Length: 238
Image (cartoon, rainbow, N blue to C red; front, side):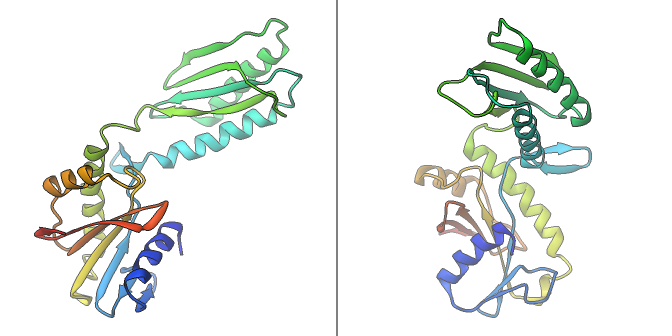
């Protein structure tokens, strides 16, 4: 199972002992509950438009973060004073094949400078870098200090509703050819936007978002505790 499917499985098995994974093989649904409820699973995360498709922000943020971490730790050990490095980006992110040598050269020149001081890099389109003295002792000269994604954030409830609409449409299209196999369909989404909504925010979502066919039920899970679930049913909120 994929990580999000494992979260859904924990939730479903808290409801019933009759839970089958991929009952029809590698086609929808992901799970079958009590022999008649088909369940699809997908992650709820912030998304952006690239060309003719919607992509999760994580699809670019995570690979960039991994590459930055490898670059920074590859530049060698501390010579006494370590330096924090943080970065800010927006999309489209510069091609790493061009970005890496540029950043590597700038950081290596900084290492060789006898008069080092904090600095900010603002000359690369859609990418900014900040270097500043690290607190405490660190093994590496450069220490990753996190990033700021200009396309993440926003009002949480608005982002949840916007991305719910996208995922609902996407999954409706995916199950269209299989819908008649089961009388009821649920959509479970580990929620990486709200990560466990407050009750007042849940009520706002209930008032604005409507579950539509082909799904009878939409359930958001807290990924830190999948037994904390927020559910909506078609034509009525629970």
